[in-house]
Amino acid sequence: MCISGFAVGFIKGWSLAFAMLGIAPIMLIGMGIFTAEMAKKAQVSSKAYAQSAGYASQALSAVRVVASFGNEKLEISNYNRFLEQCRITGLKSGVTGGLTLGFFMFSIYLSYAYAFLMGTIWVDKPIWNHAEDRPYLAGDCIAVFFGVLIGLFSLGGAGPSIVAKAEAQAAGKEAFEVIDNIPSIKQDDTTAKEHTLKGEIEFKDCSFYYPSRPDVAAMSHFSHKFEIGKQTAIVGPSGSGKSTTVQLVERFYDPKEG
Image 1: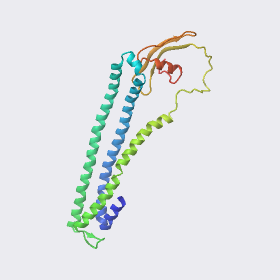
Image 2 (image 1 turned 180 degrees about the vertical axis):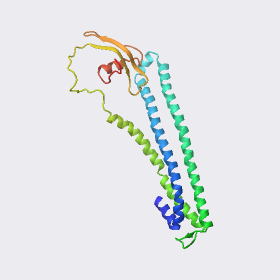
Image 3 (image 1 turned 120 degrees about the vertical axis):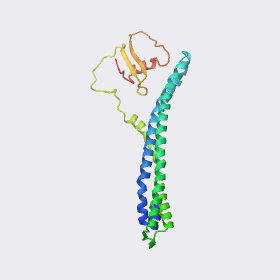
Image 4 (image 1 turned 90 degrees about the vertical axis):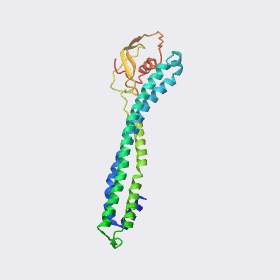
C-alpha cells in the first residue's frame, strides 16, 4: 500500500508529489519520538514490576513461615512499597507518553495543513502538470494528496510493529543480560589457594544484598561460628536471613561485606 500510494501520487502529478513529501520529516520525527518513548516506558515498567514480582514470589513460597510468625502485615507493607515505586514509574511514563502522543498527532494535522497549502499554491499560480499536460486542477491536488498521504500513513503504520519489537527487545535485553552474565564466583578457579576442609564455619560481620533487591539488606553485620560436631538451629521470621545464611555457605552468592 505504501508503494501504491506513492505511485498514484507521482503519476497524477510528480512536481506536487515531491513538494508534499516535505511533510514526511514532520510525521517521521513525531512517529520516531513516540516510538522511542514507548520503548523506554516498556523497559522501565518491566524492570519495576520485576522487582515487586520477585518479592511477592519469595513471600508466597514461604507463606507458611510468614503466617506462623504473624508477619503478613509486614510482607504486605513491603510489597506495597514496591508497588508504589511501580505506580510512580507508571505516572511518569504516562505523562511523557501523553506528551509524545500529542506531538505525534500535532505532526499529523500540521502535515494536513502543509499539504493543502501546497495544493492551493499549485492551483492558484497555476503550475503546469506535466503528467496530464495541463495546469494543475483541484482534482489533481486531491489525488496527489491522498496518494502521498496513504503512502506515508502506510509507512507510519509500521509504528505499532516497531513498538512491539521495542518491547520484545526490552524484555529480551534482560534475558540476555542473565545469559551473558559472567559470575563473580569461580567455582573451578585454578588460581585459588589450597585449603583443607575442617568442617568449621565462621561468619565475621557479614552483610549481603540480593541482586534483585539491592536496597534491602538480607543480612546485616552477621557474626557467628558454627563449630565442629555441634548442631545449630537458625530460627527467625521471614526475611531474617536463614536461607541467605545457607546460600552463602553453599556459595551461591558471596557476601558484600565481611
